[in-house]
Image (cartoon, rainbow, N blue to C red; front, side, top):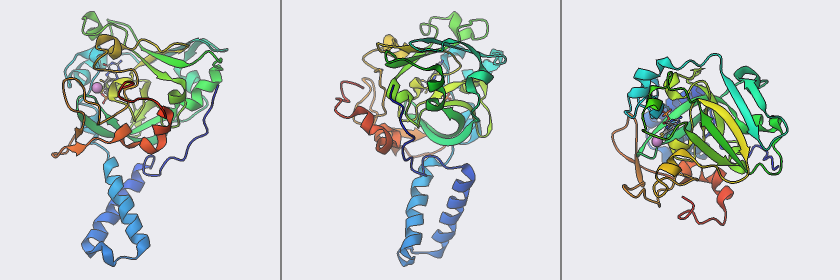
Length: 305
Ligand SMILES: Nc1nc2c(c(=O)[nH]1)N[C@H]1C(S)=C(S)[C@@H](COP(=O)(O)O)O[C@H]1N2
Ligand SMILES: [Mo]
């Protein structure tokens, strides 16, 4: 199996929030000083950096935790925050199956050990044309998967959400085929940007955001980032994923954020950052092209959407 070394992530992609705060202070101060052209080149560099950092200004905690998609608790954006209290996240077991040497059932603590969650700031771009910037706590999937010793046949990873209609009342409806399933190609799963999140804003993950364990694949549309994961399976052919199965012409397996490929029912060129008034241009790969475009070299991204 190919294990990628952590690539050079730009500091603007992974920066502790305090540092953002400081840079933003700096930006304000220098703005007061006036024309940036008068500043020495090093300071101008800092300012350019500060301007891009604004793209990663965290969305308020209240919005991150009250405007959600989690159909297991209803299809409305406020349903998950209102209904997800019925989900019991302790104890939690993660089952490892498929092409690997160490399948089994692992208590969440053992599954995550010995790693401690780190904080990372990522954009979450939802297919519905809204986006957020979230300071996630989590562990890169690439640090966890090798422990289960996937074999050469492990070409894709399939992730499954808990199925328990008592705890997840949406599963009593036919809103979606349950349980929710998502997947990644092995190299996507092993990319250093791919995170298994256990928290946000330095706190435990709220249930509505996918407690106790959810995927964050920041260059993909939000539906790839499956919540409340109970099973990880190493598979050979690409797994059948929930939204791809529901509407294959609307939701592809790759789901890489791509402003040039419209959803059949709407444009994907612009997005509204929650908390902002003006819409922003959507960036290829959600702004992470430098890091991930290479994974798709030679692929037709209109066909493999
Ligand atoms: N199990 C499960 N995971 C899920 C979903 C879901 O309905 N069920 N919705 C997805 C979609 S469409 C989006 S946009 C994101 C939303 O994540 P957030 O509520 O933390 O912003 O979760 C994704 N993960
Ligand atoms: Mo979404």
